Length: 503
Ligand code: FAD
Ligand code: NAI
Image 1: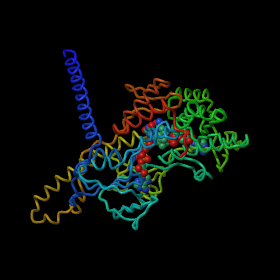
Image 2: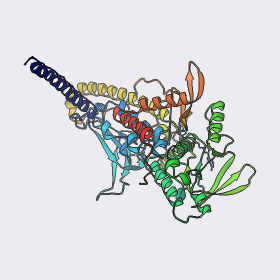
Image 3: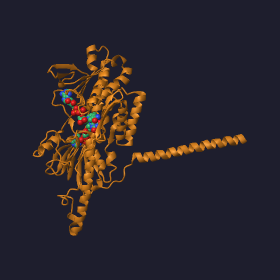
Image 4: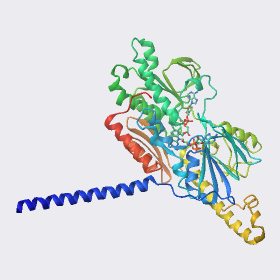
């Protein structure tokens, strides 16, 4: 009996521990899901007495503005053809499946639904800005359109954060035959085409010449986009393709074409040399001083420094030669032509106000400033504008209150249009960009970094820099959901390898 009661006691103890663990697990699960799922709050309705602030875009600039903005001070409308924010620094990793594309997308409604006052988001492209009447035209350019797919929106203040588009320099055949690397669909297209080239090369009876062409992957542009893509492609080749396509993997050829004498001109000289020697050891062929002049469906024409022309057959062509302005921005520049004298982007003053219009602001890649077109610039500009609009909104609210007190009989007519026609701007320091350093992944678990350190720049490259690159981007990812997804992708890739199925 003693031993059986001892057994019962020990079972009871085990049961208690189990119950405790299950209880703790349930509570943590409940707490985590409640916290991280972040069920939307009840939001205040739009207020007619507030001014309408329209934000164009859901990229780096617009999203950081939206996050900083106190939406109780305005009626905020966001217009963008993309209903998500995209973490571009990890986009090259999506082209080969190191990271799955949804891991670097953040639905914009996850942000707008948590703002104090309701923010209207419209998935549409702004196709015209009328600065005289303060009206924008928006069009639904998605595949599915309703009966109404074009509309107008009035604004009191407008922020243009539409970024830029791929520069083709008008070179024949680029738009038709090359893949770009700017948006999520670009990365998916590259991944699909890459696998298609490989499977087509494996087709029975394929000629050697055709296999060679199909397996020649060409990247045009030795800026950070082209270099990072080439690095990712190299990893895919040596870590995965070699196992699944043993007969073809060693026939894959990778070429990076750059018009200038070196790749990555914005990086320290030592890092450029490090990247070039790393690429050479990875058998990535770098053609510098070589400009692509024409593109056809199966080959590109390269002109060397000595004006020699070469026809190079390719299977996959990735075009990464930088930015040019969107037509919306060009049209606006034409409308404000007396002040908009640059063709490279909107000119803004030190407060990011578009020159030639007092109700329009612009930031990020849509502008031409002394800063490079970088996510970190657009992000800081967005935060700056968020603070600016918060101050302006508070100032206007005070002025409105004062006016309402002064004119008790005229309360009804004291609408937003009569108030603050000429608002005295809040006191604000001019925008200054704080450089956080440049980082780029170059493949084979190596990265390069140019980082400011007590007034000097520290240039480093290698495996330790790669760990720094990884942790920097993992921590910069906007929220724990995306961080968890990216960390899972990295782990999955390490354990199981990349997915080679073609979408
Ligand atoms: P974007 O982020 O491009 O956002 C523009 C927004 O406007 C998008 O939501 C778009 O859908 C929307 N839009 C477009 N047309 C319209 C329209 N007509 N009406 C309304 N909305 C419109 N920078 C770094 O600092 N570090 C990096 O590591 C880095 N890596 C990069 C990697 C890649 C592959 C690429 C392509 C860029 C990288 N960049 C990096 C650069 C960085 O992504 C850009 O500088 C940054 O995105 C600019 O922000 P933005 O808000 O001006 O434009
Ligand atoms: P980029 O403008 O930095 O580089 C484009 C390159 O293409 C240039 O070196 C140019 O000489 C070359 N080129 C142009 N036409 C050519 C032709 N016909 N043939 C051959 N070469 C040609 O463009 P990228 O890399 O797309 O970057 C755009 C912006 O995004 C830059 O400001 C860049 O700094 C930023 N970015 C930053 C990253 C990072 O910090 N890790 C990663 C990716 C982009």
